[in-house]
Structure formats: C-alpha cells, structure tokens
Length: 264
Image 1 (cartoon, rainbow, N blue to C red):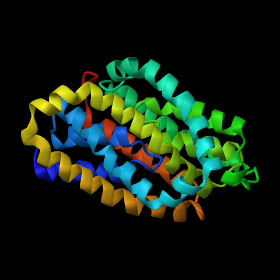
Image 2 (image 1 turned 90 degrees about the vertical axis):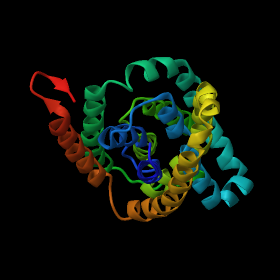
Image 3 (image 1 turned 180 degrees about the horizontal axis):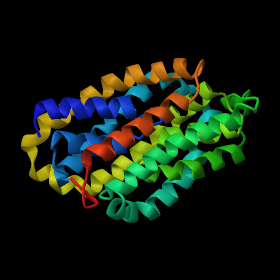
C-alpha cells in the first residue's frame, strides 16, 4: 500500500459508509482497481478506518447520545438482532461472499433495482413518522432488516432507510436513525474484526502511517456526507442511488469480465 492508495480508500470509506451504496462493496472494488492486494493487513486496515466514520457521527450527534435516552433504547433494540445474527453469520459471510465478485455485482445491482420498486411503493404511503414515533416493535424490525447488510453490496444504511420508509418514517429521519444505529453496529463489527486481525497489526508496525492517514481521511469525508444526505433526502428519493448502482455494476462487469466467463 502507498499513501496515495490510503487516502483514496479513506475517502471511499468516509463517503460511502453512510450512503445507501455499500461501503464494503466500494472498498473491495476500489482496492481491486488500485491493485491493492487483499492481504491480512489490508483487511485490518479497512476495519480500522471505519473508526473515522464512526467518530464523525459521534461528533455530529453527541448531544443526542448524551440526552435522548428513549431514542438510545430504541437503537439498542435495533442493534440486538444485528449483533446476534451478524455474529452467527460472520464466518460464513467472510469466507463465502467477500471473494465472490460476480455475486457481489449481482447483489449490488439487484438492490439498485429494489430501490426503484420500493420508491414506487412508498410513494403511495404517507411518510409522516418521526423517530419519536418509533415503537419497540419497529425498532426490532429495523434490527432484523439491518442484518441483510452483512452481504457485500447490500448497504447497511440502504437497508435501514428502506425498511424505515416501509414503516412510514420520513426519509431524512430514517437516514438520521441509520447514522445513530451505525455507531454500536460498526463498533461491534470493528471490534470483532480487530480482535481477529490484531496479530497482523502487531507484526507490521511500519504500516501505522497508512492507518492514521486512512482514519483521518475517512473522518473528514464522513462529516460532509452525513450532513449532505440529510438535506438530500428531504427533497429527493433513493432512485438516484438505484441508478448509480446499476451503472456502476454494469461498468465493473464489463471492465473485469473476460471471454470464457472468468474475472480478471
């Protein structure tokens, strides 16, 4: 890895973590485009720079975390199903899906199509609920929906926002909840990955500079994206993200697919 690659990957993490376009998918494919090998250190690097994105939300919503106990309880209810099922599926997902590029592209494109169909459906609903209107049942449902994000290409933020819109929650309120729910979810996932990757980090102290650069870049870019998405969803739907997914999946397929049915 070079410092240029570290900056690019940090930007990708910070920009895509809270958008409904799957940060995991973008990190995997950006690394492939940059020629960064998926070594043990690279996998640990991708986990650690998530911390920058987490810190951005903690900073922006610090007052909410300190004062809104009712909302924090709902976030806890949403987190529990994700924590349990995510832990149980950890080895299966890491072993089967992170190396299957064709499946990732298929999932990424399918979710884009789903966004479009879902927007056609929710356009007939009255999205009027705020976060204060969420019930315990709603919070648990959101937690189970978030579990879908363990598959690369789905997007944790996308799953949460779509699920909450079906529950008639306003788009911008759903985005805010996805940010808040990301904190315990990403912390738990990162802690598990960090525990697994710790021997690699200890054995390569010379790479600490890459980690610091990626962390800072992720933090700064996430600060801007979180604010932008709230404003965007107050006036727009998820259709633009669906179109983006279809274009990107098609482009990557044409770029990496070669005659004979193999991937470069």
